[in-house]
Length: 498
Ligand code: NAD
Image 1 (cartoon, protein in one colour):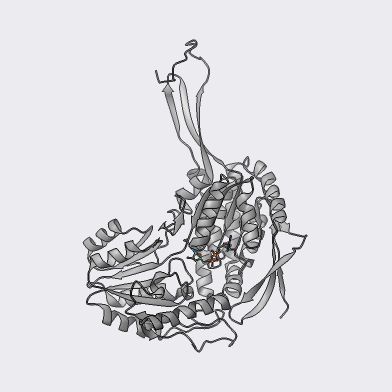
Image 2: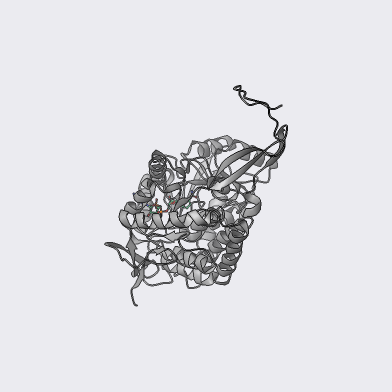
């Protein structure tokens, strides 16, 4: 197979200057390098940000009609080519094709939300705030904004941010994960085809050097970051120290609480779907099931029956679950299985040594289920980000809630119950940003906002929806008086209405 080459997308075309450093991109289902990707230096990033800054100066003046027209056009292009985008995701990330198509669909919904920017960026007008004086508020673009995205949703996470930032009148520099960079380049090409002017949407590839250059560049006004918690914290602290607006979404450890009155078949289906979909490499994956007495034994039986039927293999074949993204990550997840076993958790299903439907060299790890996990074990404390589901036993609702609220992360959670009062109490008391009631992966729709609490988000603004529009714009209030001015003479007092 010929080795591919992936480079930056700047000013409406592929970067022509090459790179001093490159990274390897793998096909996780074969374990082979499929492409080399250029890594941007700080000087490269400076060139790209300056191009974006020039583009932002005229794009901010584009009419709402023009900005909306681009969004409708790119919506159509992505819709027509969604299979191509999904294939690019599967080839570099490994998730099965149907799952990749699902993330494209969720990203597309944000583009559709951005088509409504004339409504969502609208200001307010008040007539006669004082005699013959009117006031109105407007929200204006910031300039250049940076988006730094993780490997696990190579299309959806960039699409959480990029369409709204652009629709609001900003220019974007996107730094996707170096592990699966192709989806971002396709998206940037398609925005250009949709009529977006050169330089408004740029992609730079790279690692820490490129991220640091974006975080410290004076022309970058805002940063949207998604990734692991230590890097999210670093990005937030560095970006804000350099005067930028930052929203940094971090890691997760999502609990699903199953109360004694729950429909256990429904709960078992949900635990398996949310635990092993995308091989557990989702920030909204369920990684802990909290079984409230006395449902534990029956629930674990039902979950393990379902786990046994999961087919692991090459995402392009007829499988349920693909490989992990890299060998290093697979080995790390596998080492957590070793640690859980050593710590005394009961290994109900062991995914190590799975017989996968794919080449032996792929980064395989089958679905793994632990029971009787305790909060001290590393399988419980750490974000594993792989196909490892832990069951913790609790004696009461209160104990289950304490466990969820005691966790440093607060991204997503779910409760399974047929008791409306218990569900209502849970959604009120739980300290988590996204809550599902008999829904396992409660990812908000595009017109709501996505984000967790505590160590799952640094900054106070969530992604997309109204909060996204707010993040990418700044407010201005105009107070104006026209014609027939009232000549009140000089008055040094503080202005009040009359
Ligand atoms: P990561 O933190 O390793 O990488 C994220 C981004 O940061 C990438 O673009 C990467 O190139 C860059 N980066 C990596 N190391 C860096 C460093 N030292 N300095 C500066 N930049 C650096 O995350 P990942 O492994 O790509 O993604 C998985 C993580 O993302 C998980 O923790 C997952 O929970 C989290 N995630 C969170 C959400 C959310 O909405 N909260 C969504 C998706 C993924």
